[in-house]
Length: 141
Image 1 (cartoon, one colour):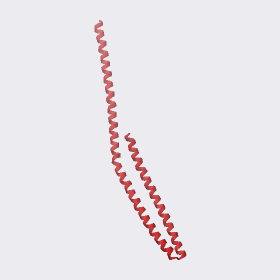
Image 2: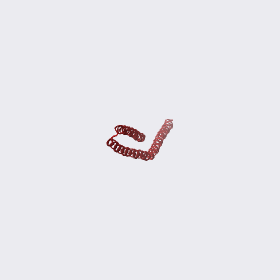
Image 3: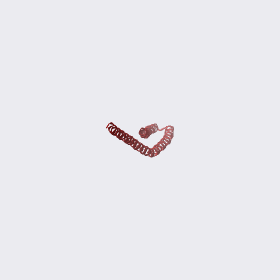
Image 4: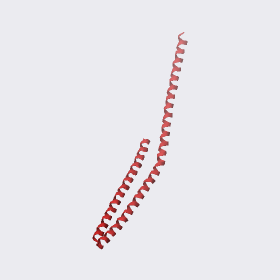
């Protein structure tokens, strides 16, 4: 059961890492898409020479830039949290491993103790049988 817990913790940490990496790639893709959109909006503003379009594009660019900064900061925070969780899990993994080793050693000692008890019982039974045979020989003679 403990080994399963360790494997589950590893899978959770791995999954969280994969999710964070996927989110970072998605944010990078969105950032690139927004930058491309901003560039195309700039081209529209340049080609038409309308100050309103340019002002709107500049405002849009500033909004996109602020949004991108927000997303990147959020991604950094999530990545830091994932690293922190991984650091928290590591000592628990070591503790689980040592507990598992200790339990395996205890089980092995129990098994050896049971075998030794059976061996002692068999020897005691054999001695009792031998004593009974000797007793019968003495009384039958």
